[in-house]
Image (cartoon, rainbow, N blue to C red; front, side):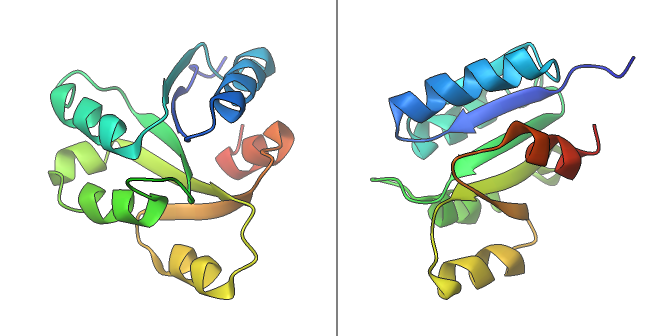
Length: 129
């Protein structure tokens, strides 16, 4: 049996955080979901827990107040390489803006831009689980 995955959910919508956390746990691919309603808070947590952080998958909302998904990526890029290497990032968005889509595809830190609402079978396929 494959080890369970560790997830961070970053989204300003409390509803989305609640639903995605429940769906991820129910799917059986994780029992560890940490939720953040602020990208800034998630970055602070990453830095504070860098030494003890297991390999982690981040599901990052694109459109958020204060710090959006791309601003998070810009800050993430400044983190130490050994910390960044533990993390895989998928951006979540309902955007149809081709500039956002191209920017996400061009980022070396974003594995893929996934449509909202998140579909767990689609995510599992992307993760190969």
